[in-house]
Structure formats: structure tokens, C-alpha cells
Image (cartoon, rainbow, N blue to C red):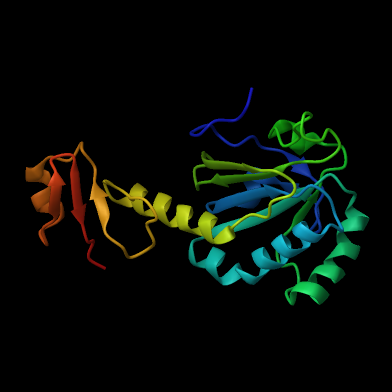
Length: 210
């Protein structure tokens, strides 16, 4: 059975480039992004890991820890890290799980036999500070991920956890949001004294104050 939104992310212990990791303990009170890459020393994965390293200030701003995974052994991760730094201009600054026994890959359903039984697909799990799965994405091995989109969704999740709002299509941080239908106009007047634009009774758009 595949993992679903709202479930507690399964805990595990596995070797990594930063030593053995107990996942829940490592996360602590942070949000997390767990993502798999199909194989070491492959071109698309090299670009992805360099980008995740480059984005460290953005992860830190959002209280997010990132952790990668492949089914290659630990010694291969270390050698690959040199290539990533030299070709992408950013050294690895987050742990890579060495899931050679596929313990984590199978726990999280990262191996899709009909695609390729020998490697993981490009899975992404966004996990909140309560260890709940809030987003899952699955890309084929041939398509690199857009980590700006993953940051965008984390911004939406963290905002909508604080406010009774949803974020519309193509929303970016700082743009207007939608008042939840469960909030009455009376409650909305208290929450949003700045007012809102009512396109339909169920579609009320508001600009949040900083």
C-alpha cells in the first residue's frame, strides 16, 4: 500500500554520508524533504543534488531539513560528492542515505518495478514538524525535478497551516490567497479587517498583511 497524505512518515535507521541516521530523531522539530535519485554518477541526479545544496539558505529559512537517497553504497556517495562540487559549483551540505539494502526505498515505495526494478524513481516526500506526510511527488528517472516548485508548495503548506486560507493556481509567496469556505463573512471581517474581493460567495480573495 502506498503512503498517503496525512500519514506519519515511517521511521527508519540507515547509513548516510553524515553517519547513521534515525529519521524521526534527525528531523526533530523541523520539516523535512526526503527525495530519492535513481543512481549515482548519472547526469540528471548530479544537477539535482547541486541545486538542493545551492538552495540551503532557502531550506533554512523555512525550517526544512533535506535528505537524499539512492541504492548505491556509501563509498560511492563520497566519490560522487567530488563530481557534484566540481561540476555544479556547490558541495553537498545535507546527508545522502546509502540504501544499498533497499530498506528505506521499499518502506517508502520508491522502487517501481514496471519502470525499472533496479533503481528508485525520483520520489519526493514533504514531511511536516509533526512527522506527517504533506506532499508526495513521483518523477520518472529521465526528468529532473523543479525544486523551486517544492519550495513553493512548502510556502503554501506553512501559510495555510497558520491561516484559514488556500492558495490559488500558480500562487507565489506574498500574493493574494483564498479565504476558506468554512470561514463565514462575519469571521472573515474579524480576521481580515483589510477587506477582500468576493468573486463568488465561495471565492473570496484577500491580501494578507505582513
